[in-house]
Amino acid sequence: MFCAEKNSYLQLVCAMEPRVINKAVESAMGKKVIDSSCANELVAPIKCKCDKYLISLDPPPSAKFHPLGLMSARPSTYAPHVDITRARLGFGRVGLRLLNRDLHSPDYLIQLQAIHTVLDQVQISENAMFLIKLNVVHRLTDLLDNKDPVIREKICLILTHLAGYHQGRQRLNECPNLYFRLMWLFLRDRKEIRFAAAYTFRTLCRDRCACEAICKVDDLIENMLKIIKNEYTGIVLIHLKSLKNLFEYDPVVPLKANAFQIMLSLFSNADPRIVSEAMECMSQLCKHDVGKLLADQYDLTFVLRPYLICKDYDVVMSAVGLMCYTTLTKRSKWRAKEVTKELTTNLMHLCHTPTLPLLQLRSMQVLINLCDCPDIRKYIQYTWKRKVQLIMIRTHEEWDGTMETSSMGIETGHNYRTMCIEGAETIKNDYGDNAEVVNVHSYLRRMQGKKNQLLKAIDWKPYS
Image 1: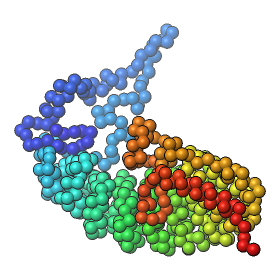
Image 2: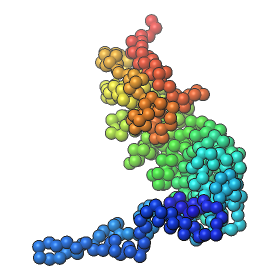
Image 3: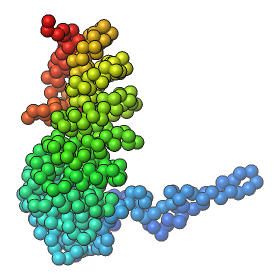
Image 4: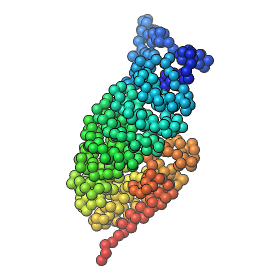
């Protein structure tokens, strides 16, 4: 049958019209179907009696019935000229093979139906893996240059789902000119397609092998840095997440493209999410020696001071994480000496946040870096040593390894540690082969070791 919600055509070849089957199923289920002809009855004026006068109140425009639903819920790029009576795709592996073949059908309607059905089928992991084995990725990438905007948007959505699998990313890396085509999509196309292409690109950037291939594409990072200045907020946020992985892999190319100055300009953005992601990108740049020199040149430690008392904890966490790299040079330490009281007070307050272990870890690391300056170390020793000893670290029973409390941990108990919670930031190492691996017990030992390291740095005395 034709599914109006999913816009897919998953029925075998039959002589009966699919709309008749839909009506029979809806009648058997007892589903109430509102006909568009009775729309005027649903939005009739409401009459109320007030004293001696009869007042007629017209309903607001948003309450008026429309057979297609709300305007905000309707896509701007929809499939035109769709005839549900011509659907001829089947279920199972046979149907998937037909889908793979019909992606390049000369009939526009058959091709459009195949693309919409593939988008529905990749939601199922078994069908997605079978389509990957059929080399559907190569067929889909050839359609990125199609003139129809509907096809371009749906192809990007399908590639995003396939890129979530390791086998899918391997096949995508083998496709020629894939990243060049995606670059032209989020450079020249309409807003919806730019968003879909940016999300596909972000999913691919999670793989280090893909980052290696992306960095070899000419002018790709340079063009991304240019478009984030005047792009929509949602698209800029996705691009910043992609750039963070690319900067981590190779910071030389973005530093040559003035990425440091561009990220610094985003610190004044009104959206705290963009500010946080820009600081994370800047942290990857400051790992390089040139990035540290630029941080001293632009006095980045003083720029980050107001963000330590921001109301958005994501911005505070990103600012402290960036300060871990900006306070490594001698120039930054002696510059921070001018605001020793204010800086150490804010950092010590952040150290006493046991509900945010990552913020504790970064704050203690900044204090360790500042203790290399004798004057700052002496001030911390006589003022905050007692407070450092009272820093609380959560036990493994109190902490689930994530920075956000979600209902999944409450419902499933301790088994949630083996699950992937999307949107919850997990604490991870900054380097090594197992950077993405999270172990609660080992990380708590790392927290305790960082606290002992801070106490040792406070009591450290120069060799005499």
